[in-house]
Length: 334
Image (cartoon, rainbow, N blue to C red):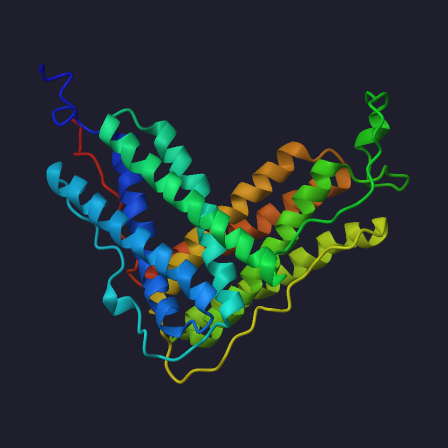
């Protein structure tokens, strides 16, 4: 077999290295949370989901380590057993744990397909394909469980105009000066996603704010919580004016514990990646598919505020020396 056809001899692309590195950081973070959830979950059905996620994470970590070793790449430090204390006591209700697990898999269903499509080497594509299939099966089981327990947050169900028509006037875009048209299906979907996302993120920040050890991190999480309060109120205004009901969860229950089960570094990474990445993905999608000017303005303002918050989070991460450098090329400057 020639050097160009032997997959073990084909060098990884920069994109593949980047995705493998990011995947390792993400999955080692998830592994720490799953270890804690397994130790504190009492509902047998939720525990079954956690066990599946933990098994997947352990296998995925090993698969990634094998590739790094084979390619003679430095294995990232990521997150270790030192970042979690499974014996610290129960912080999240079982339903809240289910929400967190569902949120993590939702992000995986964005990152893994993207990594798969960016990969050219067969073994790397196989790795991400297996990850997609595993997470998809678990996510299906999780959704069914959430529906059966009545805790799945569904988008609004409203009567739709079934006529087919073309936009005939620029007023279709107007929403700032009164007389605006009713929201369309895409706008309802965008508003719902971000409101639900803000509600979930707010409770994560409230919890982490209680658990954080450093004053700076507590203040940062508190500011994020305040920003998300504005997000939910400003977007809820649209639904209130349109008389469209939206579901909300009362199951984000948390308990006081003496010691934090998570390191500050682990919590910060979760906020910057799971919350931050989803935040901008959803907002960008909303901006490209919403047409009413008042809604677009709201999303633009939210995007600006979130950039400030997550930008400060990145600075704090660097200040605390928690940011692990991604793989870098050798200096090619002459």
